[in-house]
Length: 529
Image 1 (spheres, rainbow, N blue to C red):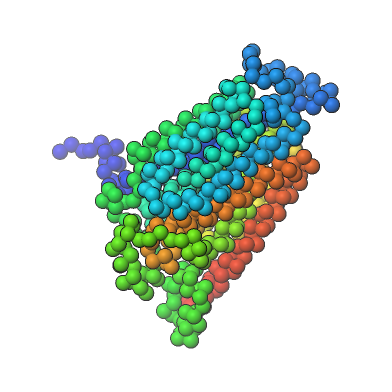
Image 2 (cartoon, rainbow, N blue to C red):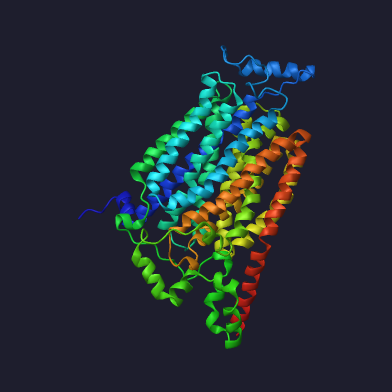
């Protein structure tokens, strides 16, 4: 019998379950990348909606006219303003552009709390497909304002609000789906790699929007809108919510340990405690709440069996208050509020900042801003890898937040020294800013959503994810708004605001970090016994 070709041998070296998991990993990656792809154009187009022309400074005016002559197409019938697109050509343009960001993000934050509750009660495939089709419509709707010569501020604000609401269908759905397919083993690394869809989507969105921004900025929105809608159709045709739907096995944990707040080691070594110490720890309610899911299966096997026997559709959906009572949800949610404030300020205002500091046109500034997202890819993977290695989620986030604050100060200073320095600082800042954000929204959310107190109720993951990301989205709404209000007084003040936000995020994690360190000390004590 002839030897199989190398390609066929490679294909057959993986099991059917592994191929399905790889497919779901890739599909959910692309689905959510398309959501972020559609969010990025507004930050790129800001430089075109308001061009930097200052009539009071003749030199700047001449420079602007020379620049405008280079980028304007031969026929530009839609807008007679020399300072951008009405109504964003006024002196209060930063406040108006900030209002666009705030409209989207505020609607996203409010909608996220409802989205998780709704998502638990509907099939994920239908729910996500409807959200992606609607998101494509409203993203394209913003760009149609260019083609139909619309200069009403409320048209653009309403498009942003509608888009913010429908985009809330995305995150709870994809996290629930990926959580169903992948167990807890190396969850930080797997989800760190998977969460790079955020940065990949931002990069693609920047490149697509920058390609059209100087010639026909309406297409900077229409093209991403079409892409999101097409991916919605792909979602309807191919998304598989749960391994059981295709007779695949549910992935068992590769280890009995879990990584929830790094406290699993307490459970592993519990039998080595003497009776007095063991009784003391057993009576500690916080230790009890932070014990792993594996403990739940050993302590209450009958309860777990009943829960699994009912099936994933037989369990009742968790309430909003019930999800809040899961230990760690409140702390990580509030931490994400400040972490996302910093991340989304960069997402929406970085191209405009680069335009102001480096004096680049909108296209080049948009291309350069993608380096922040490239750094974010490495930051998310690094955070997941470190947290898996140390088995400490909160401590990993705290370490990166501690480094992020001085890095932001360096960025505000070094970026004025030239393009090369800006490139380096964009990569470093992207890694440190997006690392904690990525870890909390993925691995931490999945850990908390499968907490032992839920007794195997996998349907709760959508609600827990929505609460954490919804609270974070409040910060995402505040960040760009504050940047719009503060930036007229100087970009340095914006960076000071971001540094304070990072410090607040770190402070909110101190209790969990202390618990992790205490558990580490207990682990050493257990070994000595």
